[in-house]
Length: 246
Image 1: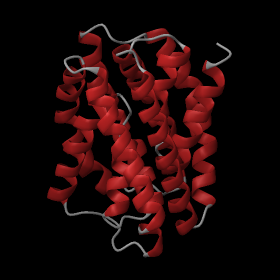
Image 2 (image 1 turned 90 degrees about the vertical axis):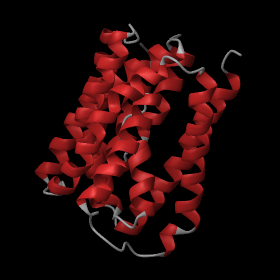
Image 3 (image 1 turned 45 degrees about the vertical axis):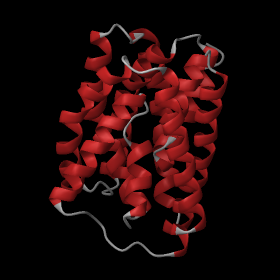
């Protein structure tokens, strides 16, 4: 419990502020709570229901939620989440963790060194492109148990979407994503419901604080912070894959 509280708060803070904190939760549950990687992914996915709800309410209250755009993304997320969660139980741990770590690290480096030098080009995507993006994000997020933003944020930033819009949309798509993904994990018995609820409630408190920080930061600074967070969490995931049992 001494580990769960600070980890939950830190994860929630990053989710609320830059949308990518969830990627660090499965490794943390493996290291500190003794869960196997599949149960860690399922428990993390369940806890993100709380963070997604808290983040959505905060961004909606500040009129920063891109409802239409996030709705199109959600149409892609929903049908892809369950297959992603079921695929998690069929793959070796490293097959999931290594590509995730490489992607997140590379995205952090790219956005930190290149994308921060240019201004956002658009505020949304065409409906068809948004649905396809949502489907890819939904499958990959459920597969890794990381929640939607960790994949959505770097993709949207790369497409020129403002950071605050990307972070806000990431909060909303977590809701259907974690519901369907958690169903897939539950079928396999890979969720510790009580632990997931505890972490979710703690992390939701961090989300509220993180969202307030995000809404006050200048766009360029927020994108830089998100890039650094991606880089840092990518290193965490790669370390988890390296030190996991062979």
